[in-house]
Length: 361
Image: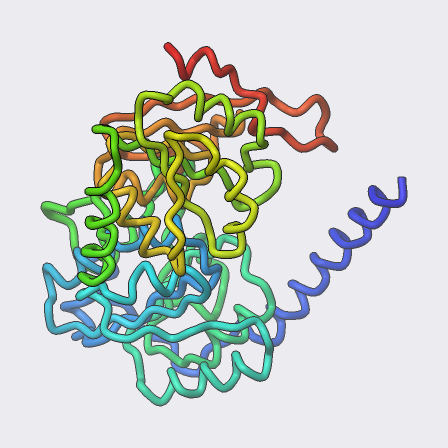
């Protein structure tokens, strides 16, 4: 009961905080008159584009790489800056289509400082993908002072010059790549759009991983990502052991964040399990995925990386079919298995409740 009341209170306060934030920050000194909204780059002589991906989600950034490439493919001299944080930085650090990366932090004083730095660079276009902006995000967009702001479902906002409209420019049930395609269309990029992803690994890490894989005793490599973004998306020991026993004739390699290293060690006692002891960042995981014969994951970030290389993939998902339709993997060699639904709206689903017999089949 206390938890329910607290949730109701937080929902009540959130609405009011956002309303106050919008009142303060939803303004723009120089609104731009867009004569040709469907050919923005050429009609407005756009030289630079700032893309906001401040949530830091790795999977979202993997998908976003298609936009960087398609912009540069059509307009190679446009400067592309990206605002992001966390592991998403590594996804684009070696991307030739990104000219500058700005690291985002949630602290207000830092946001103001970063926005001032960006404002001094005078970006022509700022692109935001957020459906519901938080107050700090409103402040950040306002203070970046881009010439033209493009947002999602923002036709009633003063701060935004162009709105990408659901059910007009794209459908909410469309795959996420088609939503990004709608942004490209607004910029004037409409023909021969490639919706594949770009993920680049430094050459020295490629070499290290290749040398490690060459020493493995069996022919095929199964890469398993046991840990998701939350405990509800994480394989338990019983599930992990089922995979180990089922793929006993193949090399099994786990990918994981460095803080999980000691936790994964207990599975090393199995002869077909191999654990790389230099998992320092996302690059090692990416390279193992690139070299895998099969990837298994309950986590969407790894699923999107596997899609970038068109890998054989088993993805374990929650039973949210609508969300799955939007974010499903694009690899051709895909098997999706859903876990059981939660018993009530106040419960959490458990990714381990999927039917393992479907893996065998």
